[in-house]
Length: 164
Image (cartoon, rainbow, N blue to C red; front, side, top):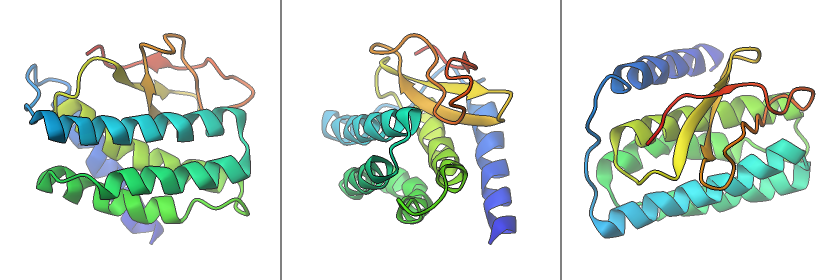
Protein backbone atom coordinates (compact mmCIF):
# COMPACT_ATOMS: atom_id res chain seq x y z
CA UNK A 1 0.00 0.00 0.00
CA UNK A 2 2.86 2.37 0.85
CA UNK A 3 4.44 1.69 -2.54
CA UNK A 4 1.12 2.53 -4.23
CA UNK A 5 0.87 5.77 -2.26
CA UNK A 6 4.45 6.71 -3.21
CA UNK A 7 3.63 6.12 -6.88
CA UNK A 8 0.46 8.20 -6.61
CA UNK A 9 2.25 11.08 -4.89
CA UNK A 10 5.00 10.93 -7.51
CA UNK A 11 2.39 10.99 -10.29
CA UNK A 12 0.61 13.99 -8.73
CA UNK A 13 3.97 15.77 -8.33
CA UNK A 14 4.80 15.26 -12.00
CA UNK A 15 1.33 16.38 -13.05
CA UNK A 16 1.48 19.44 -10.79
CA UNK A 17 4.91 20.43 -12.07
CA UNK A 18 3.77 19.93 -15.67
CA UNK A 19 0.57 21.87 -15.18
CA UNK A 20 2.39 24.87 -13.70
CA UNK A 21 3.87 25.48 -17.15
CA UNK A 22 0.43 25.66 -18.68
CA UNK A 23 -0.93 29.21 -18.75
CA UNK A 24 -4.53 28.25 -19.30
CA UNK A 25 -6.77 26.42 -16.89
CA UNK A 26 -9.86 24.65 -18.17
CA UNK A 27 -13.20 26.38 -17.68
CA UNK A 28 -15.98 24.90 -15.63
CA UNK A 29 -19.69 25.66 -15.71
CA UNK A 30 -20.81 27.91 -12.86
CA UNK A 31 -22.43 24.92 -11.12
CA UNK A 32 -19.27 22.80 -11.45
CA UNK A 33 -17.11 25.68 -10.23
CA UNK A 34 -19.38 26.14 -7.21
CA UNK A 35 -19.06 22.42 -6.36
CA UNK A 36 -15.26 22.58 -6.51
CA UNK A 37 -15.16 25.81 -4.51
CA UNK A 38 -17.32 24.08 -1.88
CA UNK A 39 -14.69 21.33 -1.73
CA UNK A 40 -11.99 23.96 -1.26
CA UNK A 41 -14.04 25.67 1.46
CA UNK A 42 -14.39 22.35 3.29
CA UNK A 43 -10.65 21.89 2.86
CA UNK A 44 -10.11 25.28 4.53
CA UNK A 45 -11.76 23.93 7.66
CA UNK A 46 -9.57 20.79 7.59
CA UNK A 47 -6.48 22.95 7.00
CA UNK A 48 -7.38 25.10 10.03
CA UNK A 49 -7.86 22.07 12.27
CA UNK A 50 -4.43 20.75 11.23
CA UNK A 51 -2.87 24.15 11.84
CA UNK A 52 -4.17 24.18 15.44
CA UNK A 53 -4.26 20.36 15.59
CA UNK A 54 -7.36 19.26 17.33
CA UNK A 55 -7.68 15.53 16.54
CA UNK A 56 -11.47 15.41 16.81
CA UNK A 57 -11.87 18.52 14.69
CA UNK A 58 -9.44 17.06 12.12
CA UNK A 59 -11.48 13.84 11.86
CA UNK A 60 -14.81 15.71 11.68
CA UNK A 61 -13.48 18.14 9.06
CA UNK A 62 -12.14 15.24 6.99
CA UNK A 63 -15.65 13.79 6.79
CA UNK A 64 -17.10 17.19 5.85
CA UNK A 65 -14.54 17.43 3.05
CA UNK A 66 -15.47 13.93 1.87
CA UNK A 67 -19.15 14.95 1.82
CA UNK A 68 -18.30 17.99 -0.30
CA UNK A 69 -16.23 15.82 -2.67
CA UNK A 70 -19.16 13.42 -3.07
CA UNK A 71 -21.25 16.29 -4.47
CA UNK A 72 -18.87 17.03 -7.36
CA UNK A 73 -20.58 16.22 -10.67
CA UNK A 74 -17.69 16.86 -13.12
CA UNK A 75 -16.64 13.34 -14.15
CA UNK A 76 -12.88 13.98 -14.51
CA UNK A 77 -12.66 15.85 -11.22
CA UNK A 78 -14.78 13.21 -9.48
CA UNK A 79 -12.35 10.57 -10.74
CA UNK A 80 -9.37 12.61 -9.50
CA UNK A 81 -10.96 12.85 -6.04
CA UNK A 82 -11.84 9.15 -5.71
CA UNK A 83 -8.54 8.13 -4.09
CA UNK A 84 -8.59 11.25 -1.89
CA UNK A 85 -11.91 10.15 -0.44
CA UNK A 86 -10.33 6.87 0.70
CA UNK A 87 -7.55 8.88 2.34
CA UNK A 88 -10.12 11.08 4.11
CA UNK A 89 -11.61 7.90 5.60
CA UNK A 90 -8.17 7.11 7.04
CA UNK A 91 -7.99 10.41 8.93
CA UNK A 92 -9.08 9.48 12.44
CA UNK A 93 -8.97 11.18 15.84
CA UNK A 94 -7.09 8.19 17.29
CA UNK A 95 -4.27 8.34 14.72
CA UNK A 96 -1.12 10.38 15.18
CA UNK A 97 -0.76 13.85 13.74
CA UNK A 98 1.94 12.52 11.40
CA UNK A 99 -0.28 9.69 10.11
CA UNK A 100 -3.18 12.08 9.53
CA UNK A 101 -0.79 14.62 8.03
CA UNK A 102 0.51 12.13 5.47
CA UNK A 103 -3.06 11.39 4.37
CA UNK A 104 -3.81 15.12 4.22
CA UNK A 105 -0.74 15.66 2.04
CA UNK A 106 -1.99 13.03 -0.43
CA UNK A 107 -5.39 14.74 -0.53
CA UNK A 108 -3.72 18.13 -0.97
CA UNK A 109 -1.77 16.88 -3.98
CA UNK A 110 -5.04 16.03 -5.74
CA UNK A 111 -6.54 19.41 -4.84
CA UNK A 112 -3.44 21.22 -6.11
CA UNK A 113 -3.67 19.33 -9.39
CA UNK A 114 -7.31 20.41 -9.71
CA UNK A 115 -6.37 24.04 -8.92
CA UNK A 116 -3.69 23.98 -11.60
CA UNK A 117 -5.95 22.34 -14.18
CA UNK A 118 -9.33 24.00 -13.70
CA UNK A 119 -10.23 27.66 -13.30
CA UNK A 120 -11.87 27.91 -9.89
CA UNK A 121 -11.01 31.56 -9.35
CA UNK A 122 -8.14 33.30 -7.61
CA UNK A 123 -8.85 32.77 -3.91
CA UNK A 124 -7.08 29.43 -3.56
CA UNK A 125 -3.41 28.70 -4.18
CA UNK A 126 -0.89 25.94 -3.67
CA UNK A 127 1.73 26.20 -0.93
CA UNK A 128 4.67 24.04 0.05
CA UNK A 129 7.26 23.64 2.77
CA UNK A 130 10.69 22.34 1.77
CA UNK A 131 11.51 21.42 5.37
CA UNK A 132 8.71 18.86 5.71
CA UNK A 133 8.49 18.20 1.95
CA UNK A 134 4.73 18.62 1.86
CA UNK A 135 2.17 20.74 0.02
CA UNK A 136 -1.30 22.11 0.76
CA UNK A 137 -4.02 24.42 -0.53
CA UNK A 138 -4.72 27.67 1.28
CA UNK A 139 -7.23 30.47 0.81
CA UNK A 140 -4.88 33.33 -0.11
CA UNK A 141 -7.60 35.95 0.12
CA UNK A 142 -8.16 35.13 3.81
CA UNK A 143 -4.60 34.16 4.77
CA UNK A 144 -1.86 35.70 2.69
CA UNK A 145 0.81 34.60 5.16
CA UNK A 146 1.90 30.95 4.91
CA UNK A 147 0.04 28.70 7.36
CA UNK A 148 1.91 25.39 7.33
CA UNK A 149 -0.45 22.68 8.63
CA UNK A 150 2.32 20.11 9.01
CA UNK A 151 4.88 21.78 11.28
CA UNK A 152 3.63 23.34 14.52
CA UNK A 153 7.18 24.39 15.39
CA UNK A 154 7.45 26.45 12.18
CA UNK A 155 3.89 27.50 11.31
CA UNK A 156 4.88 30.07 8.70
CA UNK A 157 7.61 28.07 6.99
CA UNK A 158 6.98 27.57 3.31
CA UNK A 159 6.03 29.46 0.21
CA UNK A 160 3.13 30.24 -2.06
CA UNK A 161 3.68 28.22 -5.23
CA UNK A 162 0.89 29.57 -7.43
CA UNK A 163 -0.72 32.97 -7.99
CA UNK A 164 -4.12 32.69 -9.59
